[in-house]
Length: 437
Image 1 (cartoon, rainbow, N blue to C red):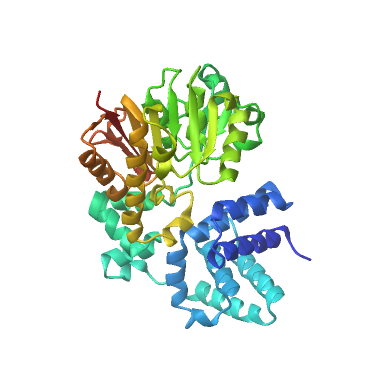
Image 2: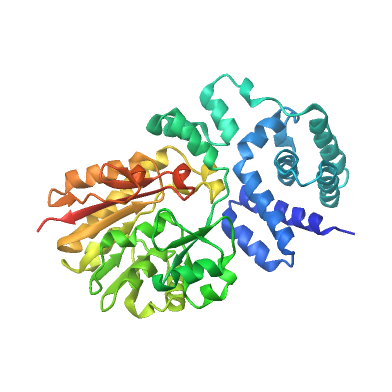
C-alpha cells in the first residue's frame, strides 16, 4: 500500500516531468496539480519543497550526479528526474530520513519500470556511502559559482560584471531563501486590523504591503472580500509613482496579470484606467480581480499589442501611462526558478527592441506635461538603464523624472532598482519620463 509521502513524491515527479520534459511553467503546473489532488497540507508542503528545491538546485544536483552516472542520456527522462529530486531530499531536507527517501524512490521507480528500482537503489546508496564531491575543487571561479548557486555561467558573469563579485554572490545566495508572502491592502484605514488578523508585518518598502514568511492568503475571507490582493512588495511601488489625483485618463499598456491595473484603479475616483493585453483570457482574469476588489467600473479592457497603440488611439488620449514592459524576468528567479534555465544572453537585446518599440508607440498618445512610468521585473542594464538612455536620446521632447524613496539603497541614477538580496523581494526596476510642456 502506498504511503501519503509516496503519493506526494509521485506527484512531485509528475510536476517536474511536465516542467523539464514538456516545458511547463513550474508555478502554474504546481498550482494546478495541488488543487486537483487530495493531499494533506503537510504533503502539499512536501511536494512544493521538492519541486521548487529540485528546480532551484538543478545545476548543482546535475554536477553531483555526473560523478555517479556515466551516461545520463541513456536513462529515461523520468528516471533521471527521480534521481535529481531524491538527491535534493538527501542533501537539503534534514527532517526526511535518508532510508525513507531511498526506499520510496525505489518503490516509485519499480512502479514505472520493473528492475529500474535496482539502479535507483544502487546510485542513491553509493552517494550516501561515498558522499558528494566538493564544489570548492572547481578551479574556474565563474563555473564554481554556476554549480554552487545553480545558475548559468553567462548569468553569473553578467551579474558579477554589473554588480561586482561581492554583491553578486549575496544576490546568488539570496535566491535560495524562500520568497516572502506579500499582499497589498486595498483600504489603508484597515491595515493595522488586517496585519493583526493575518499575523503579518509591515513591508519595509511599500506602504500598502503586508508580509509574512509564508501564508496562503487567497483562502482567507479578507481576500474574498477584496480587502487584500496578492502582489509583491516591489511591484506595489509602481502605481504610486504616477501621483494619481483621481480623475486622470491612464493607460496600462502591458496590463496582465493586472495587479498594477487594479492598484491604479483603486487610486482613481472619476478617472479610468485602460488596460491592454494581447490575449482576451488574460484580460478576463484582470476583470475578475477588478470585480473582487470593487474597481471594475474604473477599468476599460482592450485586446491590443502595446507597440501599436499610436495606430488606434489619437494624440492626447492619456494623461499618464504605465509601461510594465515584457522582460526577461531575471528578478523573479527566486519565485520562478525554471526561468534561469530558459533564458539566454541574447534575450536582453531582443527584449530591449520590444521595450523601446512600446515606449515609442505610447509616447505619441500622451498629453503635454504627462508622465510615463517604465518598469520591469529584471535587474540587467540592457532592459533598464539602457532603455531609459535610448528612449530619452530618441525623444528630446521628453525628460527623466527622478524618483525618490526613503530607502536610498534602492535609488540609482534617478530610478528605483531593487535587487533580490536587499529586501528578499522580487528584483524590480522603475523609471519615469515627462513629456515637456
